Length: 388
Image (cartoon, rainbow, N blue to C red; front, top):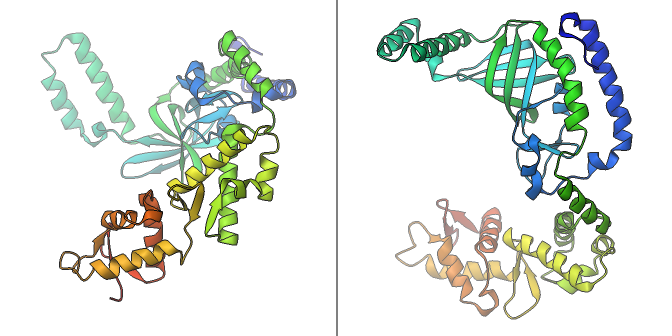
């Protein structure tokens, strides 16, 4: 609902917002798939919300769903959002050395906004006059522009006061576990009716843009076909779930070796992969999960074998590393600072069983030995044996 500007009052704004909330609740039941079915990350750039500062209610900004794939991005239904445009009243103010922290309230919620101080804030009035004198040779239009910018920044030096109506644009960030807006633009609004104008504008934006699909028709058709073919859990979500199950299994059972066939018989893995028809698909997902664990240094590929070795405290690789350190730490080259971990990696790879070992696996063993007080780290990259 939109009211003529000359007849806008605070009561009209309240009625407008309440009606919009009721409409969104009704639409939410009809567009449930729109709310939950996210678009692939490769198509996020096709959505207009990804590129602009989105005018939204603060209550909706606080409730945005965080995207696990792209850091700093959030979901409003199927729209990717990471930049917002808000307008509200300052209800809390805090000044630090490098920034101002404001709590902004638009009537639907309160969010923290961080406004960094500009270098112009450090200039005094005399410095500003000096700068303007240096610009006296510029055209008159540029001089007026420069003067306006300097005077505007000078007003911002003291920050905004409680009760000021501010307009802020910026990116959504997480600081100390709380969501905030880091401002790239902020300004004080002298006309208090601008907030009511904004609140009358938002329901139209939600109804025509945010609550509907804005992707090209061809892309929507392809997405609907893809969603019709997919059943159960998405393939991109299977590998992280498999990794969690494997980490729990390794920590509880502490096996020396593990294979794809062995993993497929674990109860949790069987339930997770039951929707896949072919064994090739199952093996591919298991190998992907084992590859992630190998990159983290938890397992390693054995030479000429489909079996993965598991790195546990007291494993055979730790004993091999201890033998290498006992042999090399007495040499003149290493007796002062110890052996570089890359040297240890090269020595471990000389063994036929560990010829394809990764650096992360060796570092995992070294960290375990350091935790057991068998070795000591003399620097970020060098290790020395505690008892020779």
